[in-house]
Image (cartoon, rainbow, N blue to C red; front, side):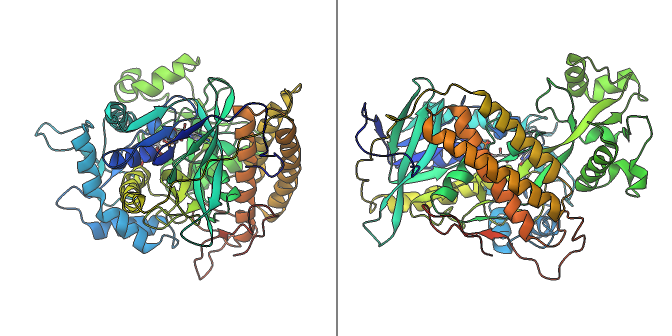
Length: 549
Ligand SMILES: Cc1cc2nc3c(=O)[nH]c(=O)nc-3n(C[C@H](O)[C@H](O)[C@H](O)COP(=O)(O)OP(=O)(O)OC[C@H]3O[C@@H](n4cnc5c(N)ncnc54)[C@H](O)[C@@H]3O)c2cc1C
């Protein structure tokens, strides 16, 4: 509850929903937690838009798992540790990888249809950083297959209630009768269908709200990725970690109407070259492998050229391959580009790097527990220590499924001894009026995302970070004033959370005085001898946060 809003009697009562467990988010993480719990508890799952509108639905490649006899847990662990550039928590990596086969078997048992070879075996592909074929997939739309499987089961289960268009605003805390501290007992939620605020209470609350990549101007993520869970947990007094590590995909289609369409890396594998606006190729000057250099190197090179030339995008050219080859190998890219008037058989594709994955998040242990009793975080919202300074491809969906199971198990064990929450205080909107200037929201939304792109993007300097922080702090003051005085809307809530996570990212980036994994600083281009997480610790909810390492 924001301190500036009173919780005293208001004009109309706040409608209250109760359940054993409240899950905020209906992606792979949230639905998996709900399904694991449904035999033991009544679960409510909230989604701020349509139930399918999260990153899970858009995942393409697949899920990493040790399924082949020639592969081993040790090898998957080693590859993950190598990709993480010294920052992965080995116990989290071992915990996740050793449960990968079980996670896939669980999905198969739910009816998820993975691609099989002619012999009937699962077809496994190989991706960057993996030393074995271990990516199980469903053609090139794995996320959709996984999400459909999970959602189909959740919709059928009588103990799971799925509610769309419900935006969680903030978590509710009450004194914990079992200890001297506070515990989480629910959340205030905006019902977009009725345009009013409701109270959801539960014995346990799970944040499964996905990542925060929408904080950047260009992102491969759907609009839902505004870091709501991270911001809510931070405001409720939970630590967050490693927020400076944001993974950028090198090539996203640059077109005003193409919001988040990825141009697959396979195009470069088949000979596509990157060019400046004048048609000159530039990658050979950056890396001996040119266009086939690692993802972060390619993203940095594109960003460097864009900034140096003041160009809005670079170009990816595969027009030298035959139209027949492109139709056979890249029908989706070809058709999508054509929709925007770009014929890839004749002309280069305008591309920009795009924010793709949030490696940091709300600190949790292997049971998904956060710093606040009875509050859990799972999936991209959480920081488990698995990804370190750079996420290895296809480890993220695996993390969702594995941690959902351990989290659900911990919740289940505690349910019987957890007392019911006290009634929640009503939400007071009696002083709030309708906004007469919605332009403030849209302007600030753009300003945050552009500021983050220009100053806190792929290549950073301390000066740019300082500049960004000043601007974000100013915007936060303006947003808080708006939040206090005007009726709440979904856009305003997302803006408030975007500004919050932007601040957390900048503060984390300022603390890291080295270049490691996804964090690259021109002021500190070298790797430090010791690898340390960046921990941000809120002093407490009501006062100004103090940042310490
Ligand atoms: C284009 C693309 C391709 C990818 N490919 C792969 C891949 O091949 N393999 C892989 O492992 N990973 C991949 N990833 C990453 C992976 O998809 C995500 O990390 C993962 O799906 C995150 O799942 P999640 O359940 O944590 O969050 P999401 O799937 O993002 O779900 C978040 C949910 O939270 C809800 N929500 C958010 N805020 C609120 C709020 N305030 N109130 C109520 N509900 C809220 C949303 O509505 C949504 O239901 C890809 C990502 C993208 C974008």
